[in-house]
Image (cartoon, rainbow, N blue to C red):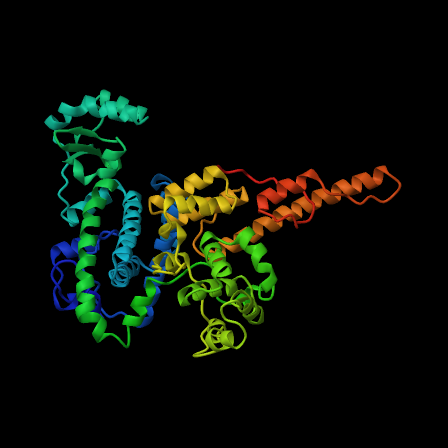
Length: 527
């Protein structure tokens, strides 16, 4: 197992149990936070191998979810610490450190294989590293930097005095009034600041949070997390490139029948609600083939609306499109019999009668686990949809990634999304934040905040139905209360007729005019 993990090591390849630990390694082992330069020693059971990796993946996915929901780095500190304590806890300090190191190296193996996977892992690991460093006491931070030989040294007295006034001005500009006054009164120790090349703290320079002089940035102890994360990022990026080469050339072939399938599946793991079995969630049979047009208009995400429209217009989808759309329909509760009816009807102009049975029926039944190896296929997650690359004539994948700006605006306008949210979604899509764009569209269509973020097309649908049901129930309650009041004021029974509020509700729902008469729910308006 150590040889297997060795593929993810930085620097020279070695199996640590064959090498006595150096004094530096011993010093690093006493610090809770790690730069992951040393391989874990001892044996690792296969059960631990996967369990440790899954626990760390839950932390990293949680961090990614926080960013999808729009949390800034300074707002994430407490939540990231809670995530780490929840999933990475152990019975002792030593076991917790071992779990931390082992899980990190396993995820290096899982996420080294493509540029997108490497970029995602680096981003989440750096956020986790930054949050954990901030939780350390100043003495622990100092011990960490010394143990890992980080080249950061505090200012001497002469250098500090030379820039003290400027440092006070920077602190005042950041609203740190007490710090600015303390600097002005010479009450701040000179070793509270570090002088480093400005390129090592790009986030602080970009945010105008440090004093710059002659190519150097003057960083306070409170900002050290931004400083130490840069060497961590550089080391991890280099290690992942090395790991990718070793993995393909050495490890993957030798572990093809044992650990390689486990490692390669980790990057595709979805840790949110399970949409693979509608029967367990109690939604199977809740949708029929005739409901699809209305549900597509009201509650489908753009990726599924695009495929439904393409199917309806051309009466055909290529295999990947049928898989992505068909499994989504399965996940929202469309039973097999209704799925066959839906696909047969939509494809009838190009595949009538026996032609559909011969060419496409097997594929529909296979999605439901009724043919082939009878596997219960799971609806695609956002990560899998985003990772798809449609070819010529294909319409699957993520529209926020594949559509141009004008095509995206036109598609969102047809969904009756609020104009401000269309612009927000287009800007986020242009910046590569595809799930944030999808969440903005959800908010613009439903008129309320999407607190959960969007990580799965079926989650988009489920949240949409939940909100629309709440709106209709509240509107129905208001209509019933109005009818009761009117009935009490008059002797004869009163049957409420269409109300002006019905039109407002239809605007929110994107209705075709067939919704029950009601008034809209009062939801927090966003954008």
